Amino acid sequence: MKLVYTEEALAGLQEALDFIAAKVTDEKLAEIRDRIVNKADILLDNPFIGQ
Image 1 (tube, one colour):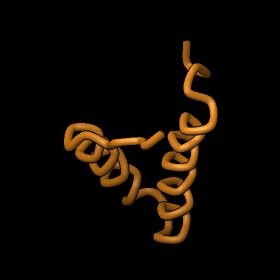
Image 2: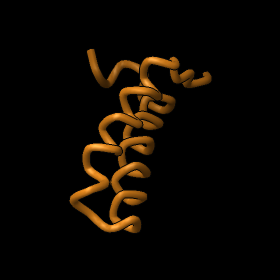
Image 3: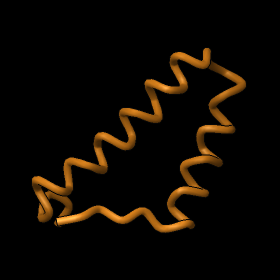
């Protein structure tokens, strides 16, 4: 199975990260981004988790 991110999803993620960026360090921002992406990747192993 393959997880596909839409342009809208990527734009939304970037918008959220831009908002957060002024409030945290670059290191923390990268950690937040990675945590979000890793949570989405869980869907590959558990596709019905959100239902």
